[in-house]
Length: 330
Ligand code: G3H
Ligand code: 13P
Ligand code: ZN
Image 1 (tube, rainbow, N blue to C red):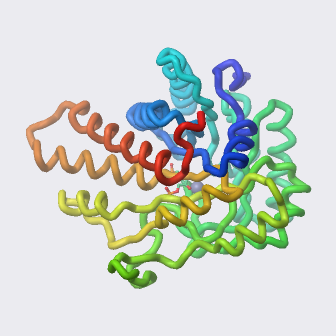
Image 2: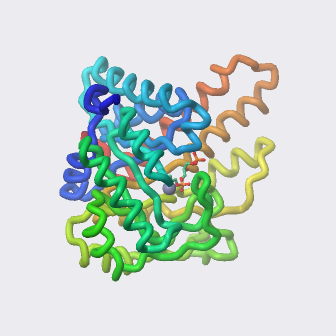
C-alpha cells in the first residue's frame, strides 16, 4: 500500500472548498509522459495555481502506473525545491471498475473518478457507492458521473450526449456519498466537438456552437447547494492551433470547441474542476509538426519535444490565467 499522503499529494477536499468560495475552477490536466508533466507543473508554478494531475487508464497502459505515480511524487519535490507551495492531487480519470479504482487508491492516488454513467441509474449508484466506501477509508476523494457526454473517453464511447437529469442528482449524491459530480450539459470529449454546420456566426463572423445548458447546471446547483460539480470535455479547440497543424501537413477536420467565455462562466459557478486534454494534444502536435516541416534534418527528440512542451506550458498558463481563474489561488 502506497498512501498519497506519503508522497506529499493532497486529496481534492480543500482545493474544491477554496474553489467554491473563490468562484474559480481547479485545472485537471491529463499527463502520459515527462514533457506533459513538465509543462503542467511549470505552468502551475508560474501562475501559482492548484492542480489536479489526471491519469486515464489509457495513460496507465501507455506509460505504466508506477512510473506515472513517481512522476507525481517528483512534481511535489520539484515544487518544494523551487520554494513554492502548490496543492497537487493525483486523480484517476474515468475509472470504469471498482478494481481499477482500488488499485489507484492502494497505489498513491489521492482522488479517483468512477464513471458509471453508461450503466443504469441503480447500477451506477451501486458501483459508485462501492468505490466511495473503499476510497473514503483511505481519505481518497471520489468523483462520480451522471449523464453521458458525447465523444470518446478511453474505452468508453457515447455516440450522443444525454444531459444530466437534475431530478436524479440528490438521490445519487446521498446514496453514493461522492465528493463531486461530473455532469453533462453540452460538452463532449475529443477535438471534434461541433461541426461548423452545428454553429451560428456571431457579429464578428466567428462560428459559435450551441451554448452549454446553464439552465441544467443552475437546477442542479439549486438541488445541491454548495456541492462540487465537474465539467469534462472542456477543450476549446483553438482555431489558430488547428490552422498551424493543417498548414504543416495535418488533416484535422473543421471543428469547433467549447468557447472560453462559456467555460469562464462555468468556473464561476459550482463547477470547481474543469478537465482539459485535447487542447494540450493539439498544442503539442502543432509544435512538433512545425519543427518537422521547418527543420527536416532535425532528429534530436529534445528539439521537437521541447517546443511541444513549451507550447503546452503557454496554453495551460493561459487557461489558468484567463479561463479557469485558478492563477494566484495556490
Ligand atoms: O477523457 C479522456 C481523456 O482525454 C483521456 O484520454 O483515454 O486517450 O488517455 P485517453
Ligand atoms: P477534452 O477532450 O475536451 O480535452 O476533455 C478531456 C476530459 O474530459 C478528460 O477527462
Ligand atoms: Zn473526461
